[in-house]
Image (cartoon, rainbow, N blue to C red; front, side, top):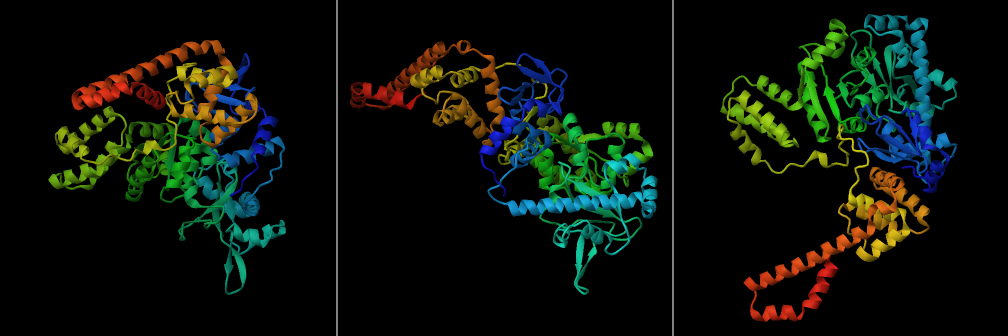
Amino acid sequence: MTTYDNRVSQEIAERLDIVDIVAETVKLSRKGNRYWGLCPFHAEKTPSFSVTPERNMFYCFGCHAGGDIFSFVMKRDGLNFREALEMLAARAGIKLVSTGGSREQEQSKKVIEVNQAAAEFYHQMLLSPPGGIVRKYLENRGIKQETVLAYKLGYAPDQWNRLEEYLLQKGFSQEYVKLSGLIKRNENRNSYYDLFRKRLMFPIFQYNGDILGFGGRVLDDTLPKYINTPETELYSKRQVLYGLYQARQAIRSTNEAVLLEGYMDCIKLQQAGINNCVASLGTALTREQARLLCRYTENVLILYDGDEAGQRETLRAIDILAQEALKVQVVTLPAGKDPDDFLEISGKEEFLQYIQNNKFSHIEFKINRYLKEEKTLNLETKVKIVDALKNAINNLKSPIEKDYYVKILAQKLLMEPNLIYRELQVVNKRQNPMDRNKTQISRDNIQYGNYSKDEKILAAMLKDEKTFAAIKGSLGLNFLARSEYKDIINIYDQLKGNQEERLVKLGEIMQQEGMAATYAKIIFLMEEMNVEEAKVNEFIHRVQALKMEARWQKIYQHINFLKVEGDFEHLLKFVLNLDSFLNETREGGI
């Protein structure tokens, strides 16, 4: 794994202005010393997204996303920290010197360059006279010229080593061409041949625009119908979603991804203006692909083929997506239809209307599916269906939702709801899929400046050294209610340097610990407030009074316990040692 000197991130932050980076995505308006705009991470009509250039940080008061310039790029583009750092370093003109993994990184870079050149070769072949048969095929499938260009569709000619010769002539070494998976070795002739021949070519883009591999489709009934780049160090089919590069902004803005099976489904729907579509490369959805979707949305609509195989895969995809805490809905197409066919037959408006009218929650889909599979609704069938659904219903967070689906299930199984509730109660406590490290967004909960007392005190302590010293001397550093606020103030206390240096270091640590948004909120509050607004002295006296009250309460409880359980000797001993007892309670805190 490639790592970089920690000083690099600080240098990048000093060279780049977060306002310039954010303005590429958000239309910002200046108000005072801040910039405001519509949040790119959730749908809103009133700007709640703010940027402070002084601290190079952002914060949304609606969805509570926040952090520094790296956090913004990571969330916007679905990158990890290393990828965001490398992208911003290039923008800042900083040459990265890695402390490990440089050979692997250089190798990946070269393979991507090979793929880019191969995509250009295939694309030009499609546009040239030999590609006429493919252009006709695409025209018959309803694919427009602008779509061909947008997806860089191509044609692999029916020749054994045309691509290999092209790439070698372009100066690529055979080693890197081989690593790309585009050529295969002929053991008998001790030579190589092109993997893709006489096929319509689909470049597979990573979310950042790099081409990782290819899919190739025959134009007749030859088998296999599709082949893909083999698994390489760079390309793993289970970790990529086709169309994500083109769809990622639409998925973010709608907060929903439409999940399809195949390349053509994805291309046709996006061409029709249904831009938030991705496909699982014609294979069963994987856990890695579900996690990739989590970077961009909270909601997934499954729109697989209407045949039996498509419906079986829908059941499997539901469970994988639910494990990642994604909200799942399902549309079942008429039997034998795939999204591409159905869109072509019905037209966009009717297609969208069908989706709207036939959209079911994943639990309703399962209920209907299980009922359809059973020939008779006897006792054994009812037990089987309830058993198959009880975990899915138990995993719902809302009691209202649980009650709703219990009643639907009871109605369809001709049972009393209380019998199903009894079955739910015997299920062991579920492992909550929402416990993963994902911020749940309440999209209508915009509360500007709705700061708690803890947050105001924490901001005052970070803003003013005298306030920090006064509170630490009087109350210590573990009095804050929320654990993350305790962590922030204790980490700050351990850092060396002046106030500004410590805040910079604290920001870096918060980024590493996944607490960038929490820290950003406090930083924004620091800029807004005067220390006097926190009413520090009043707060100290109040906390001290509460501590004293808690100590006396503890004493009273101990005395009452001795009245009931103790004897005179123990009671006398307690009174004689009251002073030491008070010291013990004082050290123990509240």
